[in-house]
Image (cartoon, rainbow, N blue to C red; front, side, top):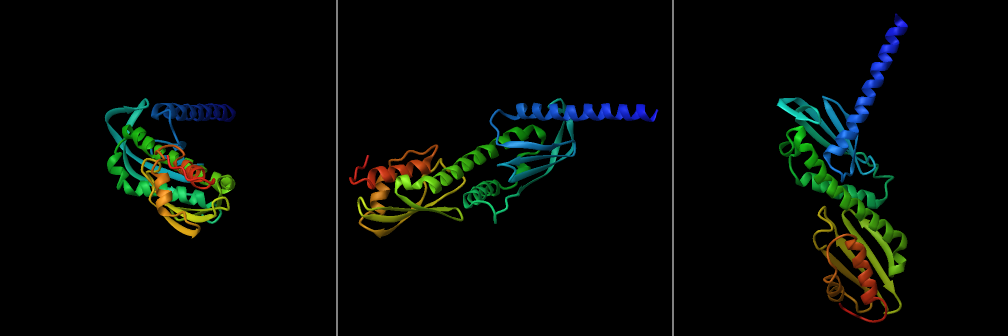
Length: 244
């Protein structure tokens, strides 16, 4: 009898894990095709989502069911608590990753109380989508910064430095005898708005006016920072000043 009970328990346990696995995939499909998150836990009591290579964790606490409403084939529950937490080890992480985290949490905090915007399970898909959009843009920005840090020499970029939510780019070339530093101030709405910047002239005549004239012609959108660097290199650092 004990062996039979053990077998039945194993079968029931297997069914439970299989149903949970299937539910996770159904939830992923149900929410949206564009995601920057993973589900690490889902139960009647709470759900835990992770973003950005498990460096950000979102914990949602569920309350009682909402009337007879249904969500993903189960009772739709109220959301009674919601919290974001950074799991990034800033002492070991690249500075670009720290910047990305700051920008994402800048967005999260700017939204006020998420719990008032997302009160039931039905509103989770839209909320996760909004966060995913910001995480995606910031993640790509981090990749741009890492690329410039590694391959910036191709664009006469001597140094790429991250300072909180600012990126400092030091350009230098003997072709036009110029050396200057451009500091861009980044925010969570990158790349949908022009980046404020300052210029510190080191050597030569190239300064804020010349750089501003070039950058004003760079359209917003994907790889905005990278395209600005390329435009500075192309229009100002190759021996002729050509403003498009």
